[in-house]
Amino acid sequence: MTIHSYTISVFGLGYVGCVSAACLAELGNQVIGVDVNLHKVDLFNQGKPTIIEKGIAELVEEQHKQGRLSATSDIQAAVRQADICLICVGTPSDKNGYPDLSFIWHVAEQISEAIKGREAFQTIIIRSTVPPGTCREIEHIIARSGKRIDQDFTVVSNPEFLREGTSIEDYFHPPYTLIGTHNEQALDMLRRIYGPINAPILETDREVAEMIKYVNNSFHALKVVFANEIGALCHSMGVDPHTLMDLFCQDRHLNISPAYLKPGFAFGGSCLPKDLKALNAMARSRNVEMSVLSSVERSNALLIERALELILAEGKVRVGVLGLAFKSGTDDLRESPVVKLLERLIGKGYEIKIYDQNVLASQLMGTNKQYIESTVPHLARLLASDLQEVKEFADLIVVTQKTKEYYSLVTDILPFKPVIDLVRISDTIPDSSYYKGLLW
Image 1: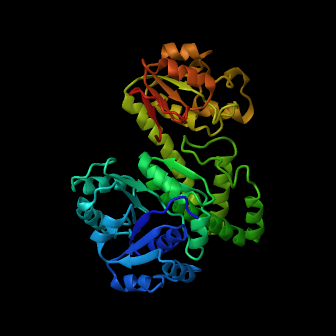
Image 2 (image 1 turned 180 degrees about the horizontal axis):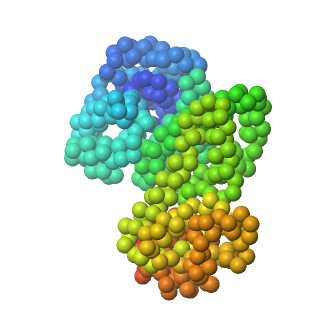
Image 3 (image 1 turned 90 degrees about the vertical axis):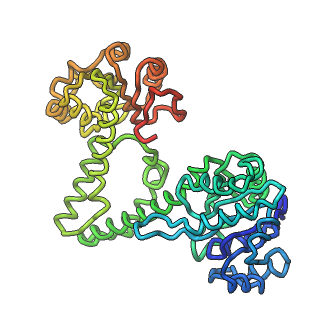
């Protein structure tokens, strides 16, 4: 049983709208389906679904019998009656691949007209998959009615995570329910609606909520392509790809985990670049095309270029660098993206001072020493003995590793000197015009 029953008008009775309407009715709400297609409206009013989906026919029939599910083409009436308007219209790709939002704008215009005659506060929820900034634009459209944003109405992003074939199961057992708003009245409504669902309710900015479905589905597509490229290479070498990927998926520490999934600087070190090159070389030798894996190295190099452009844009010639190894806690300089970045800066005449507590020029050995001598041959002259030396030398600080020591220096100098952060040294972005993040 739901904690509170609302009247909810669902705009668009396609796949997402039909499932959402039936499931919201199951949670005890009074649901009105809204569509310009009279055939869909008639089906709903007969207790029949507008789509083919496991379990949906029984759910729609039952909720219609209970009197909680109906449909109309009268948009004015649907808006006036509703506590919540749930927009589920399609956002197909245009010829360039960008989402076609014409159905979204059309519904927003209709709500803007209909809401004029409504006195009570109304929450408009965007369930459709839309680019960041869409909710804000919808607010501006509806505000033309004379209604005040966040006082008379608000627009919320509440993305769906439904898969065809398991959509009802997915609706009631999501990984989480995501609500993109900071409007307390809307948050209270949605907490009540989704309260009976056994899943965490997460609150975030609207733009983050709008973006997440694109990121989720792109990552899922990337996983499919990755597995198939590995499969093609394995097949060419007589290796069983299913056995291989079964073992791959058993690593929940790195492979199937949040590891490496936060934006930051480029990868480096002795393993990742070497093994990626080897995998691509194996594929080329067997005429196996791996479009995704062969593009990884180039994408990584572009991140170094992005960092270089940020530094050049500051116009400061004396640069202090915090961290030299490819990651903190090691002195391994092989394939370090920081070394590659410094090589470019030195070539452009920049004066560099580096501090890395784990890197001592006199103690570098073997391939580590050979690598740095071939890229930055005068490293000893560039290394600072302590952070104070870097602080006094530099007109610009570049952070390449996360350590408490580096964070303390950053907070000390931010009011006085610019900082370029390549690794997001703190979860809280400093509120300073002197601070610039690589990807944030």
